[in-house]
Image (cartoon, rainbow, N blue to C red; front, side, top):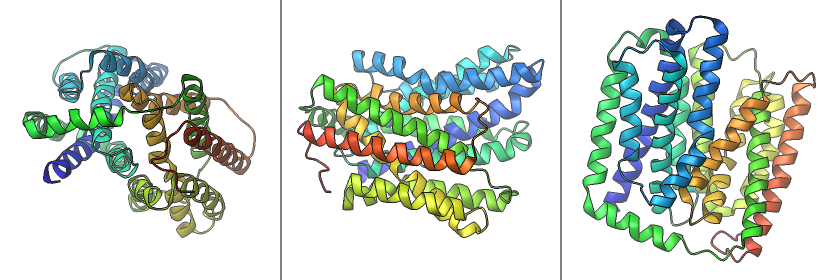
Length: 356
């Protein structure tokens, strides 16, 4: 239990660091290297592609070779190199930083899942700190690009990850748990449909999330409270789902978020509750992906972010539909997709989370 707690704590802290330093670099350093606004925007798209979508092919390679050690250290090293070397091409830097981010997330996601006992809580704890890292990195990128803080955090994280990898009992437990988690009776067709439906739910939730625009959410304090609500939703949504059932928690939280998020335009408190509820299904859908693709866990982790990237691209489209309609429509589609995917999941013989 002590080693498990250390593993979860270290990966969660390092997740905060990775997203924090990546946000600082992409928003603080890249603008000084890019020759134009369009070059900067393209760099951001390239970064997001390699940080999110590129996790799928990288994950397939890791699954094929069964390499889940030292990958995160390599990722952090790539990010650190970009801080230390002088490259004047923003596209190359965006690629390197993006791949570094992706490698960390893949190792962290796989190893956290290996001790999760196929439940959602630990997935949520691992993913949640990233939102805070992005917020703080985005907020303070101008102040921190000229300090040594990002470098110090990167080297500290590498040291912590070496500590995890050197603990033989931790590694043995990871390998043992991974073999147990690989048992699965879901057919290839059912797995494909489950992944597709979960993908739809993630994409539309990403689109719905982008439609939430509060003009009152200005300043550091309000933004921090809002972000902490996101973090809490991601972190403890899995705990609630493990206790009361995946499908119940996912559907009720999404339905409740719709009402609260709309009321949040006038009453701040409802916005905080709404965004907390909106983020609860994150750990549920990630865990369903992993429990479905048990022999390709790194790929499953990558698919989660791949679907987020698709939603990110869709948000570039200029849609004239009212934001509330986009939010409502996306949540309804997400609820239907999660419900259908979960039914297929249970039908495939998966009884680990069958509370309804």
